[in-house]
Length: 251
Image 1 (spheres, helix red, strand yellow):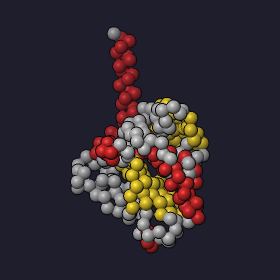
Image 2 (cartoon, rainbow, N blue to C red):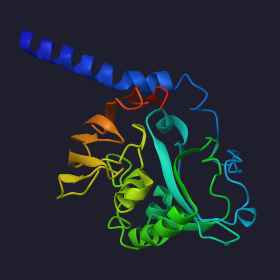
Image 3 (cartoon, one colour):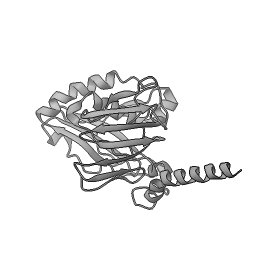
Image 4 (cartoon, rainbow, N blue to C red):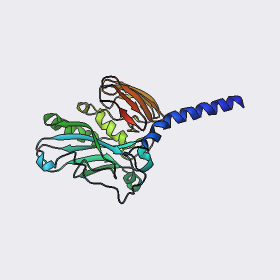
């Protein structure tokens, strides 16, 4: 009985440690439990000027807190492209409800890429412009076309929307994408693969089904994944990475 009580106590301590960040995130303005699907804003956040007034090529990676209580844990991410001279942007993302409705979550849409994600304001995680973007656009489109998990979806531990974004980024190293620790699913690299390049392309990671693993890269720094939740440190930017709270620091 004593051994059982000690084990339960340790398990509760670990659980408390893992959930402390998401609990604190619920206290911020980023996460709201009061919005409804029907009333939540999907308007442009004004981060990207109209495509018609932006002649150069642009590639951007966005993310915003997911809807409801899940926003305390995770963000939803997507990738936007605007070829040089194009009058509109194209956004690629994986959406869970589209998968559940039709068996394929991979979505392509045209229009403003910086729309609020059902009331949650987006952030830009990576951006290329001009010649660098023009070179990257066909790489992104080829990676989207070959995405292996379009007909699979699991909110946790993946494959999900963040798995999609991380997978595309691995094939477009010019993005040097450093996804936040709240991008749950980014560490899912496949049911049979346990070693892959980091999403930034500047290092490597090991992962067991997206549930347990580690990452070491110049861009991301050092990360440890426990039950899909990421803890880490980015020495170059003097930043901490914590579940729920995201990236804390100047970088």
